[in-house]
Amino acid sequence: MSEPKKPWPSLPTDEAAEAFVATADLSEYDWSAAEPVHYEFDEKAARVTMRMPERQLDQIKSEAARRGMKYQRFMRELLERGMQSLRS
Image (cartoon, rainbow, N blue to C red):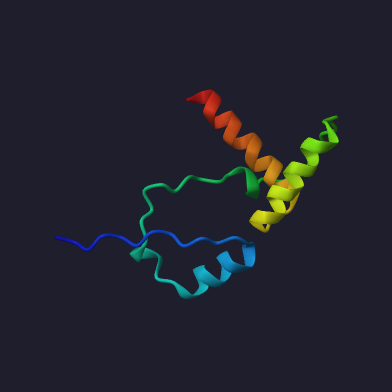
């Protein structure tokens, strides 16, 4: 019987993820929960302007900072997850 795969470590920043991928043997990790992330590699030519409560934007920026990412990228991720849940 094969050994169980390792769980993914917490990678709070892009730098941490890059360092992990550069040194780890990725075949040892459990990929069962992996999700494709196509939107982040597409050209970002469209521009969107929207109004939202300042409190909501502050929460988004705070959560993005906690995750070590730019808030616009985090907003794209939230939109993608929301679209995926609509298709489910």
